[in-house]
Length: 164
Image 1 (cartoon, rainbow, N blue to C red):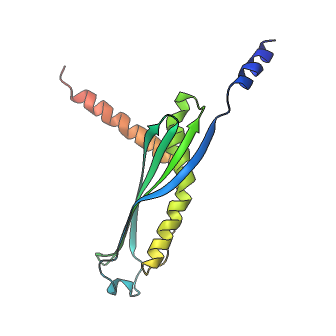
Image 2: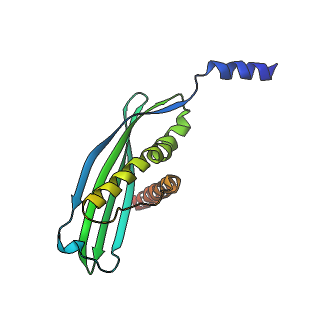
Image 3: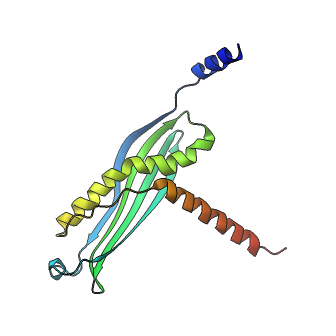
């Protein structure tokens, strides 16, 4: 009998949903400061890539999630190219438990828009005269955990700094 009541209560709950309302480029910058000399063949450049995730609630059940990706290629201490991309998605998130919202917004939403940002970076670098920059898939779950650990360490450091 209790099982039937649980099933009935579950049936009354609307199903959780996550939908992409739209995607956008907020900022895109490509620099090739030493062109055309930077296009000459040579040894493989050193490429540094960083990625950050930011999110902001826009209104009830609507979240903007943005990936900030910076990539810089250097050879012989000269910049070949530098790219900055802020790529975002607007997500409608409904009927998720409160304790699942933050990881959903910071892990699943970036995972959904990353392939589009990745393709844009590849196209921009190729159009800039270089081989396309093909980023490996990103483990947003790992980034999320690292950010939580860093925030906890910062909070602890701030707590330790307070006078007694």
